[in-house]
Image 1 (tube, rainbow, N blue to C red):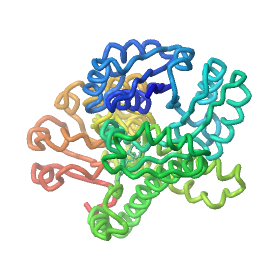
Image 2 (cartoon, rainbow, N blue to C red):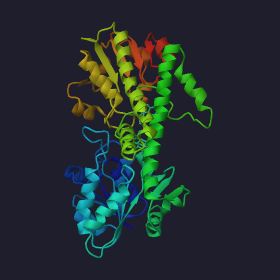
Image 3 (cartoon, rainbow, N blue to C red):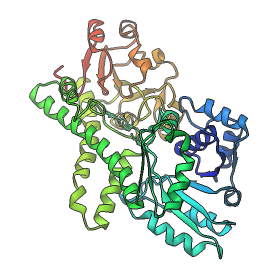
Length: 438
Ligand code: UGA
């Protein structure tokens, strides 16, 4: 099938390459010409494990091309996927739909024939209905463009795997024709038994907002428990393990630490709560304000712990932060808890060095005031305290004995509860975390 994928960020670029990989003829479109050039030459504009292989394979097959012109998209596609960002609006909690609107406005007048427009971005419930009217007002005479919503659930760091082998495909459609078209798009996956849920557009839009809200709530739940554990002298890691054995609860997303960040969970829960207010059901989602607040408090609690461990004043103290990205296996520093903590420590006068295996360049762009160390041992030299804030596997493999010989003081805050604490303590380190009695 002839597909276009408009917007080539994490979501769109991976979707475009994977759709070509499963046999479709795909045109990826973006207004960012540098990005289009990089992708056309097989150079991924971001770090995502496995993406370069799929991109190379898709380009070599001749089934994937890129353009920066929406008129090319209009001519090419039977199905147009919208994959542009829906960031938080400046000065508000709500989602900013200007990029989605711009795609629709730029594409629709050039459509030569009837087609299906499929949104994948995370949007406020009601967006499909609104865009249906917008498109109807812009389409050339005789051209009918139906709108469907097909939310994406991929995780950064697993984007290729999640796109090719998703837990489920959810589509929100108004008619049978759109449903059949989307079944054909995903046929290679569906024949492998991936569940396919076809529903109305509002439900599909809500599935995405609800899924991310649930995940955020689960993380903030365990982080709230970490506060109670700190007050009671109990151990949140054991608590999480014990809860997780209950198959109704499950152990995933119960890792207590400095909390969630990234380009999705934080802004999605805010946008969802804002949309509920608009719909007149604000109280139903007000708990998401608490989820957000608990999440932000973990950052504050980590900073306070660092201050206590350095004698109450961070001014001039040499601090090394391990990890800058919002999660491992990504170079994404958007709303990264690690980087937010590093910046706050710097603001309180600490001499902060940041190390990250993949995110150092993005961290420097976002926070030029922070120094970064290219190799781990140099970044840790003479540090009076280390904060482990993104759980890259290479940090788990560090030899705590060797590192103790490099730092000024062997003091560690494990903000992700992910390092082998016994081994670190045996090597002479003072280890502290949130929610554990040591
Ligand atoms: C999230 C969802 O998991 C995806 O399903 C969704 O498609 C995506 O948002 C999106 O809307 O595009 P992602 O942002 O890649 O994916 O990251 P997650 O793996 O969900 O992690 C989010 C944050 O939660 C990270 O900062 C991570 O460190 C933190 N986290 C995760 C915890 O603090 N504790 C946990 O137990 C798990």
